[in-house]
Amino acid sequence: MSNSEHVFDRHMLEALICPQTHTTLHYDAERQELVSKAASLAFPIRNGIPVMLVDEAREID
Image (tube, rainbow, N blue to C red; front, side, top):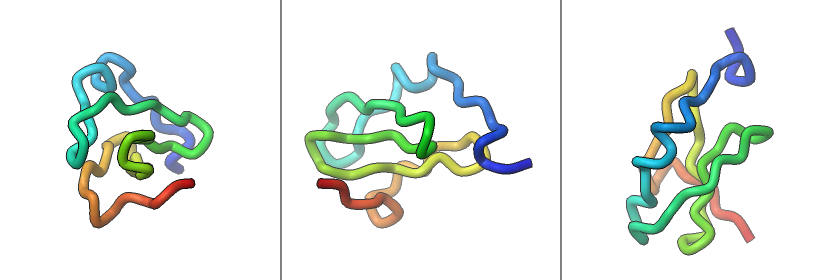
């Protein structure tokens, strides 16, 4: 099963915050990421599980 086949629970999204800034995250379904605009980071979702580690996040513009 690929990452795109996993369904992300949107209710869980409401409970998650950015570990660096403690602000709301935005779900990017196409890239399977949780985006923190305040920190300019995108946290990957792997196998339906958000990886909320700053070291694993991708920097965004």
